[in-house]
Length: 111
Image (cartoon, rainbow, N blue to C red):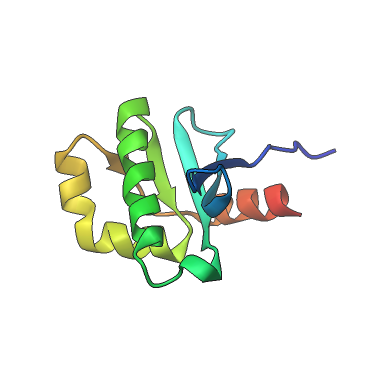
């Protein structure tokens, strides 16, 4: 028997409540306060407007507020933190590189 972890989602919505973007994550069962971000998606109709970057920045701000350690499996999160990780840490954020265990967690959660 394997443990099933629910997938959490941040969403960006239009004023009428219609979703236009999302960031999916799973909380690590091995480490309290670690959140593995594995997918970012923006509706094609809204592509090219910087919405994905806005989503990443807002999620990172929320991670600081919640004192959550970010584990960037999503390539967009990984690129952002590679470029702006020092700023994120200076603002009070925490992140670490993903491990094979994190990748396995995402695979189980999305199976």
